[in-house]
Length: 506
Image 1 (cartoon, rainbow, N blue to C red):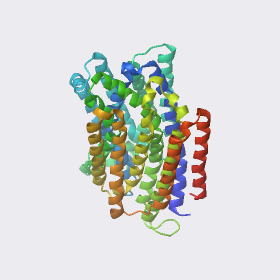
Image 2 (tube, helix red, strand yellow):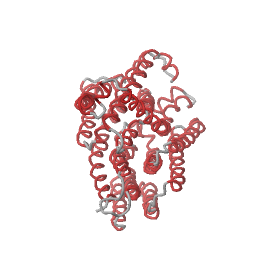
Image 3 (tube, rainbow, N blue to C red):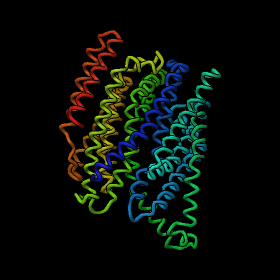
Image 4 (spheres, rainbow, N blue to C red):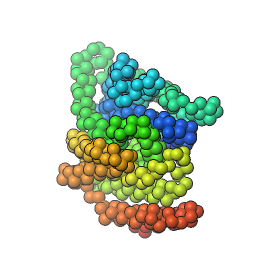
């Protein structure tokens, strides 16, 4: 059995474990959506504030992690690098940035609040709480990457699920048990749960410091104050930062593709008060579409370490056929088919069962459900772009990813700035499609010249074409039927997709 086949088996197993923590966890987290959208009315604009601030949190998290998750995998997988030293360096960089960020937020809370359109004392407190949350999240990102690198998928999944279970439990206690309705508790409970999870990384951190003190190959030199050891650390830090900064730019552009609409909306929409109402509706409906983000995230957690491990191997594979580069390319081509097949199936399931899924959100938020298929389409494009992105990571030319993501981000922001005043949150949804589509196409075209991979375009195109046909039947024909018959009809259409997959033996 060659490395490509075994790699796909590991990918499938790890995706299942990571998917459990991501998909099941997010599904459980959906319990908070009907809770918030029933406790917090759309007209109050409270959920719009939640949507807006969490968008900023996502962007800041990219800044603070500084691309160190991918950088850690790349350097820890190299044969000539010490993975323990790589881990400590990555953690040190992220922790330093997080501390500086926290100090800046608490010193300049009022100017920051004014800059993003908030004047009240409550909003300033929300900003401080979320600053603490994002700092802790950034620091946790490196130990979570360490768990993935070590293949500790079970502990990874357990901690992710523990956070969500604790968060849901406390939210139910506060909003249902105690009957409180203040948006403040949405932010405070997030901070409480994030801080609690941090303690579970103590074993890994203690082990690393113990290793540093006694077992590391360069420990003696470091303890003796050797200039060589210090130079080695400085050199590693410089090389890691050189590798990571284009990933940072890529990450900023990528997360802006997901959050820029939610940050720009209150600034561009003509009526500031109504902007929070409309943003709340959009933010609630987008939650339904986030099944694609869950699948992509689970796939990424499993896929990224495997590709880097394959690329880090030297010489021929175990069977003596081909090189590790051939195996890596074959794995990427197979994974693309695997990913698209699964996400299109999920797309059809969400669209087909929308008559039931709509009850996830409160009734006064359901006017925005028409954005769900559009946002899911954008998320699929983002996932394809992620699959296409490995060529420039493997040849250490991450600057290409930065350019592609910046191009996509520019398109997205332009669409939002031009069309939000007239088309409201529909412009946000289509802006995502335009932005991700731009980055996806550019990455494919340049990648096929720099690092060609033989993707099975005929099979991939068949999946997409069938999905488009089934989607239009679901939305143009099935909707004319009573709800029960609509569900049965859509189930049959989904079964047709499954049978097609089986028939193609993929």
